[in-house]
Image 1 (cartoon, one colour):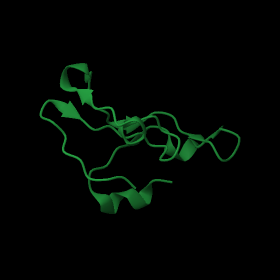
Image 2: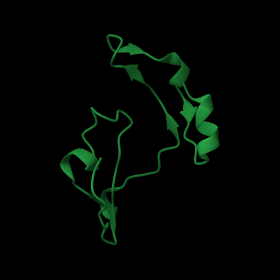
Image 3: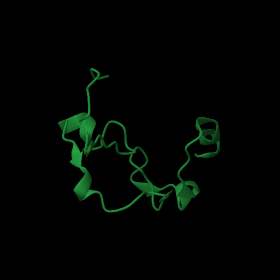
Image 4: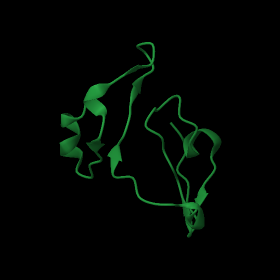
Amino acid sequence: NMEAMTIPEGYYFVMGDNRHKSDDSRLNLKLVPRDEVMGKATSIVFSSDYDNYYLPRSGRWWVPLYHDKSEFSSIK
């Protein structure tokens, strides 16, 4: 729950995967300059279940990132 904001040209708003525990643009409202972006994320390499003693969620290892919201249902 945050107010709408305008992202200046040449900057990115970044979001982590761990909603309430991510240190990302939502928490600290810092934007990432374009020249600091090193590549493009294409898959989830490793995922820990913070609510289950940080045990790995093997069903989310090497899962490709999706752009079509209808494909999210296949991710655990």
